[in-house]
Amino acid sequence: EVQLVESGGGLVQTGGSLRLSCAASGFTFDDYAIGWFRQAPGKGREGVSCISNSDGSTYYADSVKGRFTISSDNAKTTVYLQMDNLKPEDTGVYYCVADPGLHTAAMLLGTLLPPLNPQPGSWGQGTQVVVSS
Image (cartoon, rainbow, N blue to C red; front, side, top):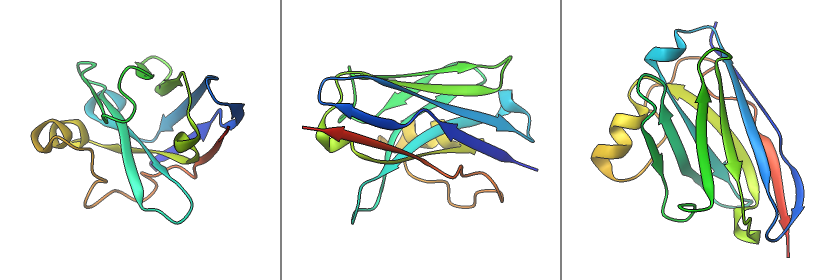
């Protein structure tokens, strides 16, 4: 059974930092990419970053380049999102998702989109990030 659990969200002031974690289980970690998406109140889900667990290749949305860093610990089957220099517009619920083609699709399309047919349990429950001004 695929399962992803996010943690690490919280309240931080503008310019602060948070590190989100996405603990994964129930699938062959190295064969998948893990992506982070966020959803602000009243807005759609936005792709933030993803990483290919097979080779460590990464993708970042323009809005977070230079501020966020995604990394993967394959031994712990956990992906991290280090968020620095946070801005109020980074506020939202952050979700991680696992999909084999996520990173490849992002590189081809130039944007990170949610997987079309995710397996049950491929999305985590989300963790809230609030950046105060």
